[in-house]
Length: 238
Ligand SMILES: Nc1nc2c(ncn2[C@@H]2O[C@H](COP(=O)(O)OP(=O)(O)OP(=O)(O)O)[C@@H](O)[C@H]2O)c(=O)[nH]1
Ligand SMILES: [Mg+2]
Image (cartoon, rainbow, N blue to C red):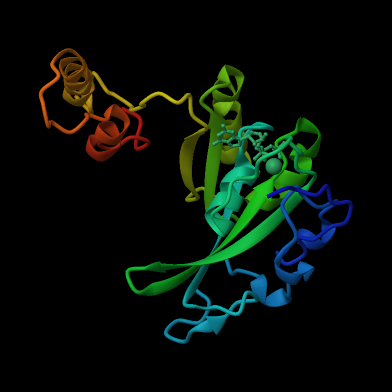
């Protein structure tokens, strides 16, 4: 899947998006249509209680919320959104997002149709003032860093300062470490004990399987074991 550099604004469905200066690097929306006014989302997220509404993607929903992707340029915000929306990875050369754009996706959350209007922001410094204008209406912010890029991690503090300055006080914030080194990964806490036993057990199992070749024993797969057993990675600083 390749991306086209767009020169024209496509994201005009949000409450303040008409002032959006330019489009992003997201691929064109369905049919290339601009978004209709019904993609506006009230601050409390409740559209019509008990009465499903129709989003511009022709899907019914009960609740609607605005979610923003923020973080340094290149951490993978656009790719994450495309992966979530279309199930694909945007391969090819990096095309930095210009301005801001959004995609809608309706989730079934315990039987309730929840529409997420997900805003993909430009990480580059020169677009920061554009992004600030959108924080106010966001119900949730996904702050991304790139696990292979230390600077993007170091900048989290500055991003959080911006979030506290511009977003609503009760905004939901989640930190996402994106990309991968191709090695098993888990978060540990010496304080709470999170995944500490698991880290050593996983290594013990891998080493034992390497050194003892037991006939007919299935091959131990460290990645899969960690993925299956890992607890609470990504949640809650401790
Ligand atoms: N290996 C790997 N590469 C990724 C991943 N996510 C994104 N990339 C690559 O990282 C580069 C930047 O990704 P984007 O999604 O365009 O980054 P962005 O955060 O939207 O950047 P800006 O639009 O400038 O803010 C691209 O070359 C992607 O192919 C990932 O999970 N793994
Ligand atoms: Mg982008």
